[in-house]
Image (cartoon, rainbow, N blue to C red; front, side):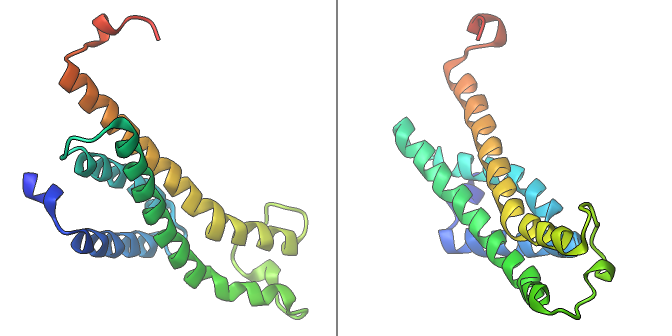
Length: 157
């Protein structure tokens, strides 16, 4: 298991890209599985960063950089998948009502704009948050394990 955390960064990024593409494909373009994949990605980033003794500021900085990289890759994938649909906004004959997206808002054009913003911008941001959450939970668990502080010894928050 320890060999997984010392892989070259190129291999790690290639494996992440492959798994993230599979997650995007499983969701058929809707990145719900990419967002959920942020949790184990955050775990891996935190475990990889803590293999070397670093200051807290350095650890948190590296975790943030890793989370931004994962989110940026998902942003690029979603921009490639959904970006071609932006042209439909400027086509007066485009049938946005029958495009197949949920029409949450009162007008199809507004719903379509909301859908594109959700898929291209908000979903990678949610993956960023999920990756940071996974990293911080992992760091918290490792800190408790290293310091030996249990729940009863920690006191009130």
